[in-house]
Image 1 (cartoon, helix red, strand yellow):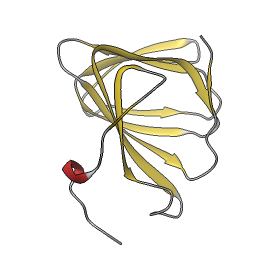
Image 2 (cartoon, helix red, strand yellow; image 1 turned 60 degrees about the horizontal axis):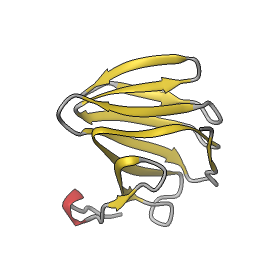
Image 3 (spheres, rainbow, N blue to C red; image 1 turned 60 degrees about the vertical axis):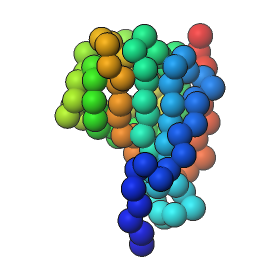
Length: 117
């Protein structure tokens, strides 16, 4: 059990993305079932089409974005909740003049990310 400030967690660049950063707020070594991550996609930034072997539960914290999930495209904004099933192709693109930020919770299982573009 712990409490920490989001400001104390290191931010790392996401290699697969453009102008995209990630914080692992709660990692697999700290919680038995789920990890919690924060993603920050700067204006005009993106994460290209890919799949993951684990599902994603997400909450938009700030900004606006477009997300492709399977064959569908969605416009999302602060307070929207998103579910992406395992192995479904998806992508993210920030919209507007502010960063697109979201929390992403995933099960603590092996997560293989496969780029599709």
